[in-house]
Image (tube, rainbow, N blue to C red; front, side):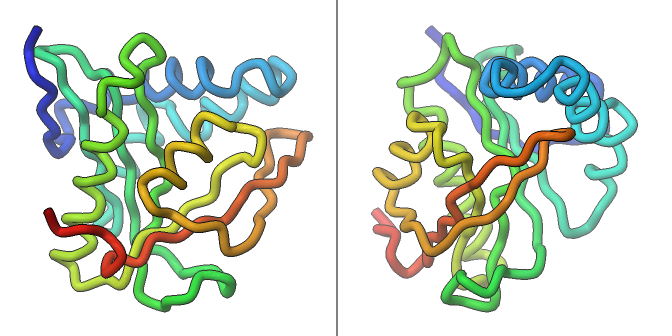
Length: 178
């Protein structure tokens, strides 16, 4: 079995990244909202045009987890204002981190998070922060096991539905440089 390679996404990846984003978001959260709300959300965030726009932003990076020629997960990070509950002011947001359902428990999420930590250190940022749906037990457990801690809550809107997310942070000084 080929090993997983993490690489930065390029403009050539836009179509496959958009399709992968739609597929993985739907797999993770497709059963929590109405079909219209889900369709609108994936169109807003995972259309080819939306992904292409995001790839052009200087404050956004996508990184792909590749198993041979297949994308089995991806990470989207961005520089954005840090919420007041996060205990540092110079952070990077993990806006999206998804792993294909049939590839979970292979360490891919950890590799993508390691990538985010490396970038955070390289950019002299203090840490990572994210919001994650409180009822996504699999994701909350993963982030806590990596070292993230809950510092507050945030509202996530998916169409007409509102969900409460945990606001979590990871100061990079807390991560073993191993």
